[in-house]
Image 1 (cartoon, rainbow, N blue to C red):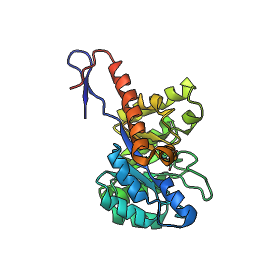
Image 2: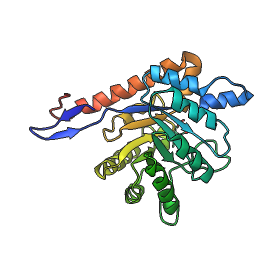
Image 3: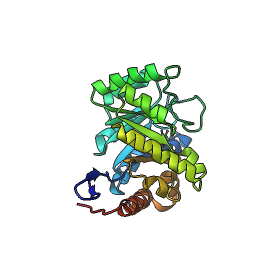
Image 4: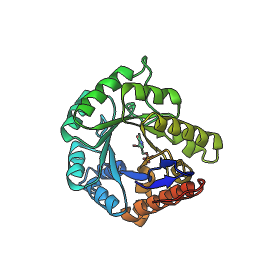
Length: 267
Ligand code: PXP
């Protein structure tokens, strides 16, 4: 982790930004023909070569892209932290407890949705109790647990009460309106709030090379989860290069943000 010194003796840690590459849509392409290729395991290997810091997969209830076999093989074959996204389903919980990925991101999952539609409702009248139960079971196995949340402080507060390890802030609204300063500001405020509460802060959904910069400049965000735009670009330029382009853009943006701080020095 790089350190940034601010002021005279005050040392503030700003982590480098990590990229976890979501390979779901490599499996979507495979499932379009129910063939063996393209294999998301191969994509995960190439993602590592391209500079990925982690791999993410979403094991959906309908198994429409990623299957149990993919999760197990990626965990075996690729020496990077694996994040499994999952809805609150007992059978998937049992499987994930066996595989023991590094992290689990709990997400809302509506049957028939094209992609994740929003953050978890962590309020007591929403999914708080269930999230707490799932989190406990996973954390007991040494798995870090977080929730996908919309950019609001209340969700962070509840995530913290439950004892989650991280939150992943939904960037969809931003991606639809990348010029809207208010949305970026809100994501930054919520990321800062979560970070001050001691939660690790991730972000993602609908990010691309074209819009990632403003999110990567938010210094409280430690990791981005990006899939679709990387897979889409990989069709034309190859997987390794698509990952590299994304990582380079994220690093450029983060360096820009850190270097604009007063008296910065990287040691
Ligand atoms: N974060 C979460 C919670 C998601 O469900 C997804 C999509 O699987 C992503 C991030 C990645 O989104 P995208 O594929 O649009 O980059």
